[in-house]
Amino acid sequence: MLQRPPRGGRFKSGAPPRVVRVLAVCMALYALWVIGGSLEGLKRLPEVWDRFSRPITWQVPEDGVQYLGFFGTQADSGRQFVLVRLRMQARAQVGYPVVPGCFSLVDDQEALYHPLSRSPLFLERTARFYLAAGDSVEGELLFQIPQGRRAVSLLFARYQGEEENAGVHR
Image (cartoon, rainbow, N blue to C red; front, side):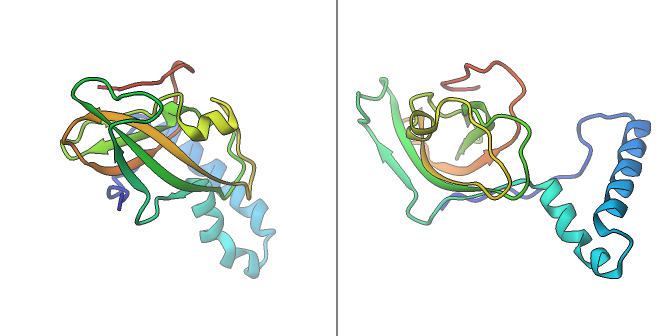
């Protein structure tokens, strides 16, 4: 079963301390607005923070990974297809598009691969889609990795690059 790697430290983006402080103040004001000044609202604050910090959750079932030599066509020489079935749920409004570059498959050599644009998930929903709070999506992602390697984990993050991003990312 694919698993998420352990979460690292915060603010690895290199943001200046002043920006971090401004964000902290904005979050505090937002939290006051959410709780409405009540004790009951204060108890909900950890849940609100969790939804804000992780707006999308995903899960790969125990039997959700298949290794294939053929998926409509033969895999490239020395490569194999990996078909990953997943379930995603938006816990909050997601303000960026979900595109193939949002996903990365990590293999047993720690190499990253983006799904192919012909993945069933993107053929069913389009190559770029948005999720509203409460939306659930089930689908399959198709990757092509070197023969003999195994999938270790599936990562998801906001993609900030070209919209056309199929294939292997090295």
